[in-house]
Image 1: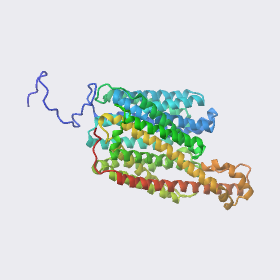
Image 2: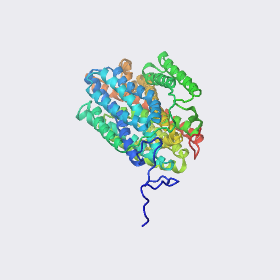
Image 3: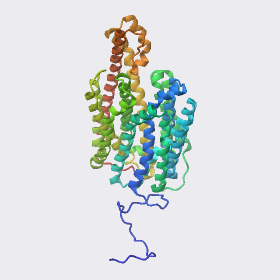
Image 4: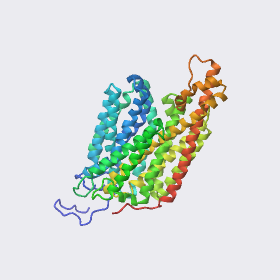
Length: 537
């Protein structure tokens, strides 16, 4: 047996290469040796909590409205307050983590998100719910980008893709489980319980993080913080996202919508110009010199445009047209969850071997196939026509999410990994907001132009059909405008005509989605390289 050197022996002149047996130390670390896989476990808890919460709130909204006597506009702000606060702080949260410590801001985000969740359940008023939902968004903006920043700091490049695959799997599965968990809690406990459930998850996440997470930050020394950049970016994103989320209710050509979006775009243009002139920018524009990062950002936004937009109208179809409860609807989308579970690590493995140029277009083509498959759906379609598009959608979303993380965070320098994580998360949120608003608007517009004709074709007398035109908004959500005093034949005719009008809107939304997916596949195939390297100064 070779003799062990004495404690006073000098260190070897050359450090041993990082390996699973000897985890790497993290730049700027406090002394704790980083275990990459334990780091992945720790950040998965926070990611699971945030993604699950986002999915269950939609299920809880109707009960929140009934209990707190909230208007439709109030319920919209339950979602929009969170979305606006999150979009405005994601890149800032990543930058703060890069500069002052990713573990510090990740754990601060978990603690704040957990406390805000409990406060929502205790609020007792719709105003309190909205205020604390905004607080959730602020703390989510600290948490989300630093999950990827921490992974980028501890995983070597050859293993980062697999780590991202597992990260994407946790993200997609938690979001897909949301309707089932939310439905069970709302039906059998209370709407408050969908927020209280975050308390044990958050406490567990904090305990695991304290035990295993290393601190990591940019190795560069103190430098001036880009306050003006923070203000410009936050104002631009707030204005643009506000215009997007209100476009469906205000109208896409209304002065309010156009003014908000135009103001947001103008502020973001000023921000981009300013960032090229400041010594230490909030979002270094040099990152976009990498074509994979730039294309990956666009396709990432499109990926969540498809996922959140399609899931929104699919849930309307399953619950309001087919009559399933939230839990039953969630169970019927399990093929999507299972496909995502498979696709994320598979996409990461394929990306690691062939690069995102293969997996990203493939994922978008699968989503296109899912969208075009939905064109076969009718008001009474059997489930056998539904699960194949669910599987294709889950496979496509999971693959693109894994590939886009490699194309964005994997191509950024380690010192900018938090900012890159914030950029990806911002693209996800903006894309999701656009998807929900745009596709709902398409369905509503189609219903408005066809409802009268579909009702008449279904056997509704013309005067009655004309009177039901005011129920267009309900029909656009899949709800037939029937009443208890309607004769049976008339009731059946109204249900049939309303269902046909709604399905016409769904088919239009699915067609537009499929075309966008094909364009995204073409962009990814043309704009990505098979092998890319990180951005360099």
